Amino acid sequence: METRARVIVVGSGAREHALAAALSSGGHEVVSAPGNAGTAVVGRNAPVGADDVAGLVDLAVRERADLVVVGPEAPLTAGLVDALAARGIRAFGPSRAAARLEGSKAFMKEFCARHGIPTAAFAVFDDADAAERYVRAAGRPLVVKADGLAAGKGVVVPAGVDEACAAVDRMLRQREFGAAGARIVVEELLPGEEASFHVVCDGTRGVALAPAQDHKRVGDGDCGPNTGGMGAYAPAPVVTPEVHARVMREVVGPTLAGMAAEGMPFRGVLFVGLMIDQGVPRVLEFNVRFGDPETAVLVPTYDGDWFELLDASARGDLSGVEARPPTRSALAVVMAAEGYPGKPRVGDRIEGLDAHLPPGAFVLHAGTERGADGAVTTRGGRVLAVGASAPSLDAAARTAYEVVGGIHWTGEHHRRDIGRRALAPRAT
Ligand code: AMP
Ligand code: GLY
Image 1 (cartoon, helix red, strand yellow):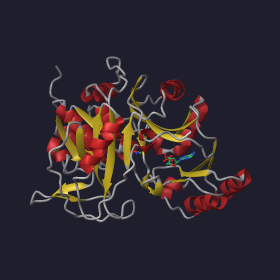
Image 2 (cartoon, protein in one colour):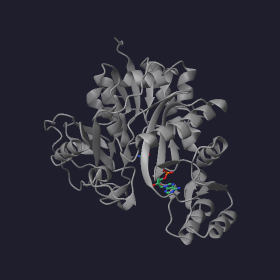
Image 3 (spheres, helix red, strand yellow):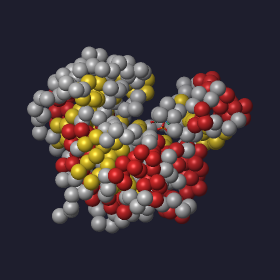
Image 4 (cartoon, protein in one colour):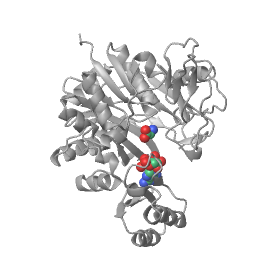
């Protein structure tokens, strides 16, 4: 029997609420920094921002934390895990050096090229004229990406060559993303269907979680602007057993071996953003943290113990943890505030949060806060991730939407078609 550990979860989204709830239900004490109205119920919140590396190290020392689980990418690329290690505190997540797989797209593409990992053909530029000449010579729309972290806004998938050149101009000449866009990656547009493939790693081994699929556009039928993600489900049937085996063999294996050989073994979760075309997987991007909203469906589809999994990764020894194929399905719907993904309207009172939940259902908080009067109000764009797990995806979808239907606030919006690719007859 595990002893009761004290775990700090860094971040304040539905991802962090899902992890905090899983750790708490495993019998551990959870402190969320900074957390939200949901994490305050499964543990305590500490008023330290997710970007405040020094403040988080102080908190972990003060709390005598056994483990720090880092949710978002920014503190990872800023070196939080290294700073904690220097104080003898174990943390789940990659070192600053290894976090470059997400923090620099040029690094990631060149790493893939060095290790034969399948990804779109690319070139790296810091000169706008050279980049524009390259785009015009290609004669077809190429994807333009800011090198550094740009809060999910640094990728332009253009409809034509002029739009691609305009993106080059905004990034390299007008410095729309500041230093993060002083260098760009220009790459081939890949056809296919996307999937989110998460592997928990210990530096040499990886344990795959259920393959998931996100829904990035704000509106039904994948219309409207891009968001951080409007809903997710798992397992995603586009990741067939054959695709799964190829991803482990062609992507995960060479990535772990390559990172170790280059002196930065990868620990934490490697989130491979895949494009799958006729059974052939290619890497669109690497993230070095859990996806959000994907985590809402990864947690209930993993049968093992979450503390054991995250702690074993942080210790660098996953040998005692088995990869288990998911035996359940899960689906989560993001409920968003009016205006999202633009500037969201905040401060609205959320009604229906106290209703009794059907079996398998969950309500995860993201942009929420509890006022002095006890009422929970909206505080961000993505407000809740509401979902369910069940033996089948259809049952999970039914339950999830039943719970969504009972929660209201002024201006709330959500997609009604989460899971449609797996629920509807599949297009050929
Ligand atoms: P990223 O931040 O790299 O995941 O890019 C954001 C989104 O842009 C991805 O989820 C894809 O939908 C799209 N995207 C990125 N790169 C490509 C590519 N090479 N081909 C097609 N779509 C892409
Ligand atoms: N849902 C995609 C991401 O977390 O990056």
